[in-house]
Length: 73
Image 1: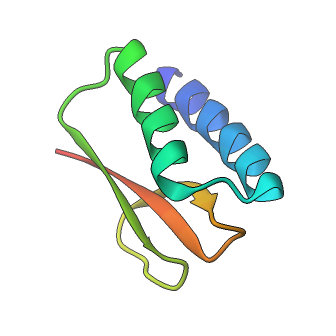
Image 2: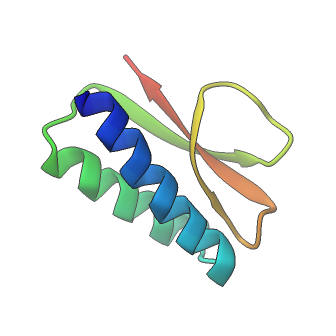
């Protein structure tokens, strides 16, 4: 249930960021802060091109041209 709520929160953040075209580094920092606040550890966030697919997408940025991928471990 915790992971579901985290995913919902991150997806809502991603939706708002997509509409505004937020810079990727800024969005990545916001997502990292939320994960840290929830006690999530041992993860990585990576900014990749929109066509790359390696991990769970937790945000899109720069008007949908890039995405932020979450990896545990």
